Length: 155
Image 1 (cartoon, rainbow, N blue to C red):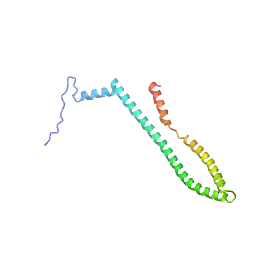
Image 2: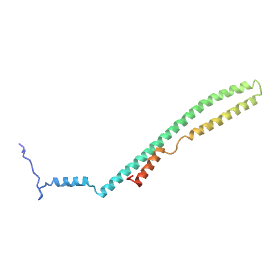
Image 3: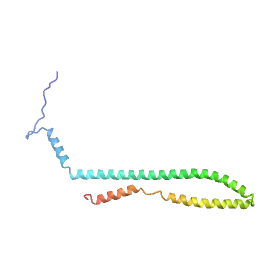
Image 4: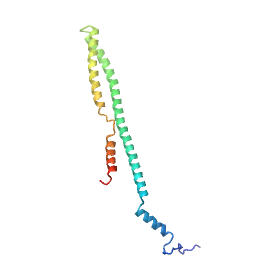
């Protein structure tokens, strides 16, 4: 049979048990952290903040690269399909024009038309590619805010 009587910890001269003394010291430390603890916490928080900013920048760049890659893939697919259509349309145009003029001149006229079309498409594609942002805009803004806060944390 086990004893159900309570066990008592030895007490100090003040009447506090040894178990109570560390608990009181821990409570005191929790209320008033030391300068070292505060600096450690701030350093840890800053490390976490910058780590998260880097993660945000990576995600933002990855998203922009993914968008640009998809656009380039669509351009490639459309270009190939368009090439096939234009090849046969050009052949039909050359054959049609060769009924009213020499075949060499007909081919030259069709080639000139496609050169103009290619130039226009190049300019349009270049304008679209310029809209892709190479810098992570959101990350740059939050880094500026973080730097301003670090310079004046009480404002």
